[in-house]
Image 1: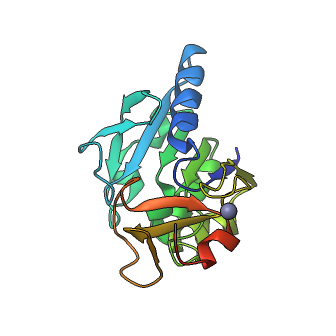
Image 2 (image 1 turned 135 degrees about the horizontal axis):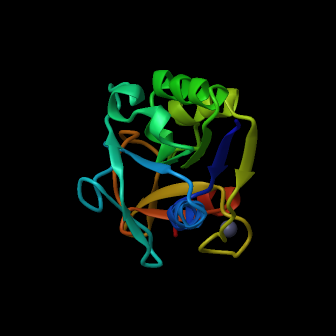
Length: 185
Ligand SMILES: [Zn+2]
C-alpha cells in the first residue's frame, strides 16, 4: 500500500483532517491505528484534539521507540500519524516497510520549523512517501497562502531559538514568506 504525507502550517486543520479520515475509514469497517508523537503533549498524554472540536484517543509513540513495539501492524488496515514531523528517521523507515507490507499509512505534519527548515522526520517522509499533498491555510496578515510557522513574542517575530518549543496560537502564527520576513506581526 501507499505512504501519504499531508502537510500544512499550524492552524491548517491537519488534525481535523486526520480525525475525519479515521472516522470515515472506521465507518466502513476498517481497522485504524491513530498514532501521536510523544514530544507533543498539548492535549494530554493520549488524546488528539482538533481546533474544530473533534477528538480521539491516540497511541503515543515516543521518539526512540520502535513503532512495531507499540502496535502490532497485523491488527490494522490503516495507520494514521499526527504530528508526524516529530517521528525519527528510523520510525519513518518502519512505516515505509509497513506500507510495503500492505498497510495504508497516512502521515500528517508540519513541513518546516519556525526558521523555515525541514524537520528531520518530515525530510525522511518526503524522501520515502508515495504521495505528498498540501493542506492550505491563509497568511494571518495578508491572506495569501501561509507557508511558515512563525514564532513570535509580543509583536516581534523570533528567528532564533530551540527548534522544538511546543505551543499554540500564543507562540505561533501562520504567515507567508514575505510577511514572515517583515519581522513584525
Ligand atoms: Zn502574508
